[in-house]
Length: 280
Image (cartoon, rainbow, N blue to C red; front, side):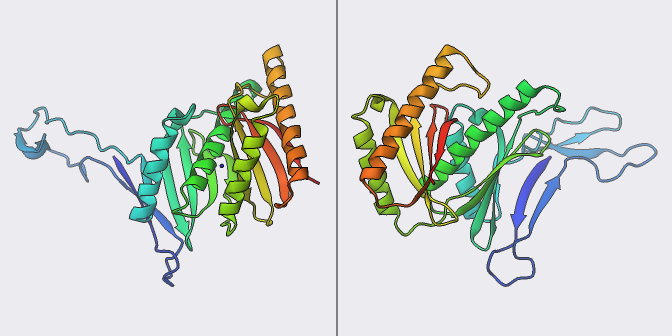
C-alpha cells in the first residue's frame, strides 16, 4: 500500500488422489504400553547422554517436545508462515497468535492463525466484542503483510480462538496484473491527501483487487484505536477525523478516475477499522 505437531499436506496440482488433503501427526513422549509387575531397568536420554534408571528409581528428565510455531504442507509454505509470525510478533496484538498454518490447495494458500483469544459462553458481550476486535486487527495485519509478500498466493485467512473455533475469516486479494499501476495510484493519492487537514495522520494507501474485479482502498493512519462501543469524546474525534479523510479520498478519486473502486476503508494505528464507505 506469527508432545510435537507436524502438518503434512499433499502436493497441490500433482494429480495425486491425496491432493488438497492435510494430515496432522501428533507425537507424544511416553511408554507405548503399561506392564503389570516389577519394571525392568530402562534407559532414557537426558541432555543427549544415555542414563540407566533402576526399578523404582527417578527417571532422568526428558525435555518436552515443543510444537512448531508455524507449519505448512511444503517447506516453502512453512517458511512463509514463520516469516508472517515474526512480523505479527511486532504488532499490537500479535502476541495472541500461538501458531500459524499455511496450507495449499492447487497453489492457492489458506493461512490459519491459532490464538489464545477466549470467547467465553456468549453471556459477556463486552468480552466477545473485545475478542472480535483483536481478531479483526490480526486479519488486517495478516492480509496487508500477504499483499506485501506475494511469493505465495493467499486466498483466505482464518482466525481461531483458544478452543480452535473460527472467530473471523477473510478472502485474500486476487492476483492483479495492474498492481504496479495500482501501487502508483495509491502513492499519488497518499501524497495528495497529505496536503489536506487530516493529512498528517495518513501512513499508507493500498489498492487491492477483490474477487469481483473491483478494487478496495485501504487507508492506514496513526489515529488511536477504540472499541466499536466506545462513545468517549476521544473516540468521537477519531471517527470524525476518519470521516474527513474518507471524504477527501472520495473527492480526489472523483477527480482522478482510473480504477473501479468498490469500497474505501480507514484503519487506526492497530489496523482496526474506523469507518468504511461502499461505493455505489
